[in-house]
Image (cartoon, rainbow, N blue to C red; front, side):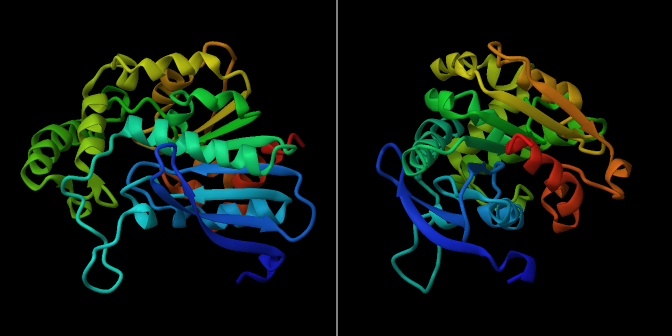
Length: 298
């Protein structure tokens, strides 16, 4: 372990989603006093392990931090009955992005609120993780939310030529492939394997002018319930979470005035940040420090 983080206790845990499905997570605890609780919510097709460094950093600063995998992803994917440590096929596995929010994210917020009832509860959302905040009924338990490259991911607001590549891949490659295989394979370039329902709902949202806001989900009414503080970071070299896309997502939180900040790689002495770069350890003293101070109200 990093010598600077040897005062952090790390525990692998399991907790139930709202429907009882077992979700796997990692709890990062300071060995000293706990001053804040933080829930880190993953991007689509991204396992929780990429947030390990940032979670450890927050715990080092006195936060109790939980990372976890949505159902069908990482360690929250069922294991095969035969073979050693082999994941079960996702063919026939029922899940959608709205299920991730309603069943998994809702449960994670509730678990942290119940476990740390006296601590301020902050929410870090990466990409889809930020979108989910607006879909959960218990977002009123969150005092502060920090979005990292989280956006209304309609292809129309991505940069060119990436937006045309995304539209073509999702509709002319991804959707037919998912219907043929019964799931979305990670080898197609999306990250982790995805359940069929997750990918198809994602593709539908990406193809819609206002992303998830064009759906008829009753859960959209929860955007207006959130009354905490919200800061959203977008990065100038991120082709997906452009500032207009980030602003479209944050516009859904009508009860508050979200703060949207654009960061250039040169602002933090980096050559590139993009959609995932925030979570690289070399940003510990810049991006991580800034978000941690804001989460902790310092």
